[in-house]
Length: 522
Image 1 (cartoon, rainbow, N blue to C red):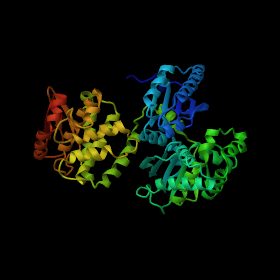
Image 2 (cartoon, rainbow, N blue to C red):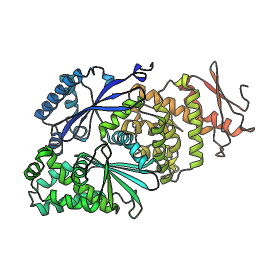
Image 3 (cartoon, rainbow, N blue to C red):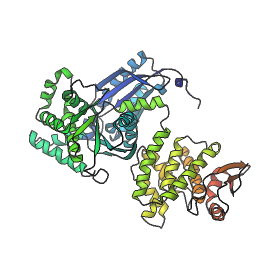
Image 4 (cartoon, rainbow, N blue to C red):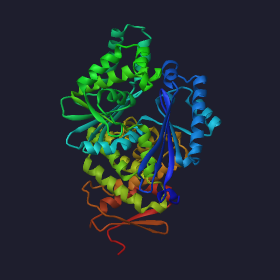
């Protein structure tokens, strides 16, 4: 696809976030250098979360409310001249993603407005969140770990960043609106309601221990409108663009005050700030969740960021490349952590990944895959043997299971499955329609798995000795033969044998036999 003119000219774009309690839109200008200038923010309350988290599905009336909001936004988009699908991105989070009638919701929105809504899974949201806040994290420095936390209406997202690399990311099924709805079913007095919420919050915090041990020096960065609201009350001259810092003690005092008010009192007390009833519902539970997390992590202060999901989406549109080299490096950081957890042979894994990347680039004209598939191949190469942690027997199947059931930063469910299948087929049987997972893929993804698994098999064979002897390769297509030449090793007998045993999938997929040579084309 040719490069877009927008790389050399200013463009006006918009992003819409269909969230738990509201539908929000940001309109911005992106100049030729990628700098973003926000032109307008809009937000309209639509309580999808109340439907999903109490009934499990979105009520018809709520769907029509969303339709009306999006139609009104379309009129504004027209005024800004935003009429190309490439300049508009519309996403939905947990309230839509978890609804049993989410497909009916998406179809109704499309029929009524022509807008294609993308339900984002947890890994995608983590990736976009990091993209938005990356510059702020760099300003904080890398001397200590940084934990990024956002408590939404339906879930709580945590990122652990160390030395500018994401070490851990997870989305927990704990949200402010979920907490509110769960407590409301008891119709309990204020004091008991707080105890019920703290009990639920603590059950989630108990899951933190493995990845977020207490007692270590670290920063805590809080995202989300509820904490920005608190910052506006607790920080003099609060500026959302600059962010700010509040003490955990100050947050506790403010949270106590909020939790002692009724929802009507919150709305009345902050009438000048135009806080809605829906926002009042989530304010107390969200602040309490942040407070409990801060206390658990033993931090004395909390950094409040003005960044939100829409900022990350705009940043991605400015980059015009979702799978940037920086993002790929972030994924690899969490992959290595997973590999170490399963005691993989790191030297061999790194060598196979390096060879696989060289093969991917040199065989571009043969496989014709997008750059993002290089990341899937590299992850599969690094993790292809983690199934040995479970058993030597059929370990490739164990590898697939472990990858597919892990939570790797930035890889959503579909991409995780693709990666798991690539790793699964690095040995033994070739892809078959009856195989679990493979049959679920569409044709393009099935073909991609076959191509990448074939390349991975060659990369594994090229380190058959596990001595990392081969560092540089050159792929030379000659008719129906692919010559892989390397100047690194004089004796390639072990690799030659491994290639003979592993090249069948490559031959079937690309129609080329492989010849390994220790001479170069020069």
